Length: 410
Image 1 (cartoon, rainbow, N blue to C red):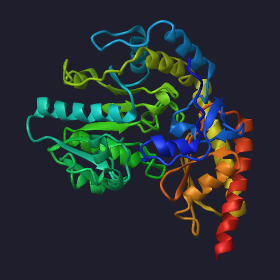
Image 2 (image 1 turned 45 degrees about the vertical axis):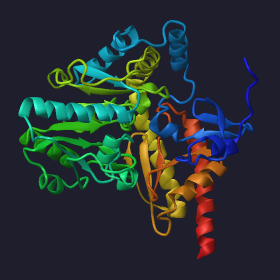
Image 3 (image 1 turned 180 degrees about the vertical axis):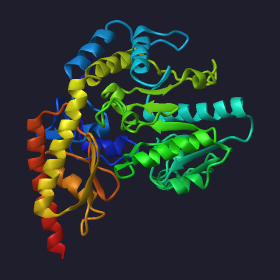
Image 4 (image 1 turned 60 degrees about the vertical axis):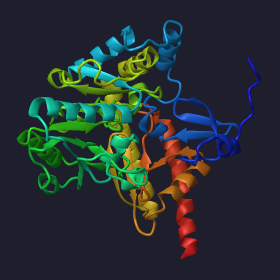
């Protein structure tokens, strides 16, 4: 084996496409909800790899599953199936409304499959002309050209040439806005039950029920994008369980593999039948390594202990943020569900979410943002209470620094 090449942040600028602007520090090791960089500095992780690391870093169940499978079988073509894929699909269908599972490598690919399935279903069942897809402003569904166009953030889709057609966007949590554009031409409505990238904005129960009713009225499929909200993030295995409604198609990724790249689309047998052999596929989808890890993650996450623990940790996070806000008055509101939380900034801190993120990093804490006005928290679902307390102490110091900096400019 060749000598390990020394690398630092400067190497990124020399060898990587500049579509990212990563932090100066480079993490090299993680355990639980803590991460260490090249210099040995410790960080508490409230970011969770953007709602991915649901069991933290290097959880024994995941490490054991991957190590065991790595010594058995890594990859097969989709001419064959494999045991981990079948076990995971069985557990997913037993735990949800779905009868059938399609595997992909990411949330974007799961959403791509859902959108293609909806269009094919509409063509097969209703004929030509029923191809309109409706989604919501500030929604996010991935970075493939189809999914990024369905996503309601033009900044991500502009500048790449002609976009896929037949896609409309309406206001989130505004049923009249949706009703105005729906018709018998609508084949599907795609929605996040709680918008993540769009600012951590929950869909109200009445709104989501109204969306379901409009889909039924116009014979359209309801697609729930649960890439960020799924796999225990909101306190149930999937967020739809708390809405009182059931989607026709659900997409899942991120926490599904706990950090190993895997995505899936879940749907009913009747709808799934329209993706006949050869109509869609993925070279790595259903990979034995990914499925074995995801099965191990599911065995841990889909338990009363962990799911109830998410709700308990939500209360701790909200109480700590409220206490910080009583002192510094930086948040307009704290919103979200479970461990997908957003602290919306008040005046004069609007537009400064990144300032809070950078200050937190300086204090040894990893957080996220959701747009320029919201600091986002998506930690491990099993983060120890001591890490929450210590992390919030660090966040309070970060807030104090930002407040002082803003005050010095006034």
